[in-house]
Picture 1 (spheres, rainbow, N blue to C red):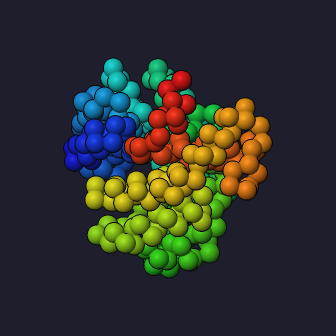
Picture 2: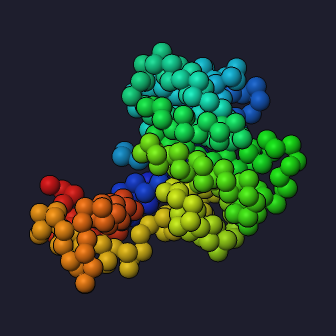
Length: 295
């Protein structure tokens, strides 16, 4: 946890913006019997995180004995977590239970991130995404595969199998679609082969370009820079977007032709989002574009 927070602060200083979230784990990260002590340590780390950096907390599932204690502990400080992540969400009722607990902890303004980790959760993904407190949906690959009782082979938890098995790919697409339907952030699952940078980059690009994911989990600090790079717009994408947005502005956001192609507000929105992502990932933009963000 300390190493991840240090890297987050380092990259924020290097790029001028916080380019990735850190999620401190009270679920799998806590030893059995030591949940309260671990939650207290996590709460302390949230308070000491670098300013302007997003630090969230994953608590236990809503039906776990430590859930309410986790929520109370990590939300009692002056600085609230950027989000609370709830694992093993099966339905919108689970989301509401988490929202109610946060209301009791006087943290009704802290958004929820939820983990979709079972066939039932995938079935309810659209209802879950529709909940107003939900900011992001994440796909939990290992639990999803395990939930099938051996019907999905173990290699579907690996970097290649997770993009090949039909049930896994179907679940990923359903979750991504649900998130986009309600303007929420879809976050792709981990790649456990953390020393294989080429495989990680290929997986990240596939998740972004083919499955509609806009973020991705890492399980090791060495994975963060490749993931940020894969989810950042390329130089060519930014170069294409700049003249289109400048032409749109000059035309009062009415239709405009750029390099023989007609653009209107539908394509303007697409290219504006590219420039937004470029700014969020610390890329240098022309001064005339930067002025749009500062006005």
